[in-house]
Image (tube, one colour):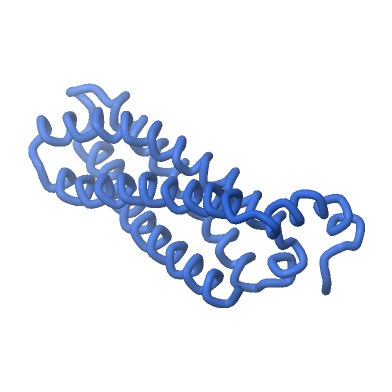
Length: 171
């Protein structure tokens, strides 16, 4: 299956600008990598902290939940920038990426990462809303969910990085 000719034609001006310039690809690739390093680095650090805090005292857990909320806003911003630059990279060479199994695998993993992030923020919100009188079993169940989403997040961030390197080496 090849890229639809109409899509290739539509994106031809951007593709030409990208391929004829040294500055444009440098800015786009830097933006993509910088956003991923920032968002992924922060996410990995927070995932690790979540796994540690889950074994901590109620005070440590509460402090971690506050830090996690603040970090999620930054991670989402980094993911948004990486999505924009990812689309720019895709559209610069749509004929190559449209048929790339590695590209679509990476895109699928990003969708899974976003879905996992949503599950993580829901578990976090549940923990924020549970008061001191909450059933201990419910609190522990929410922390188990949060730990599970942190582990999945770690796996996906590294798998996405591997797919990105594979994609870059194949191109």
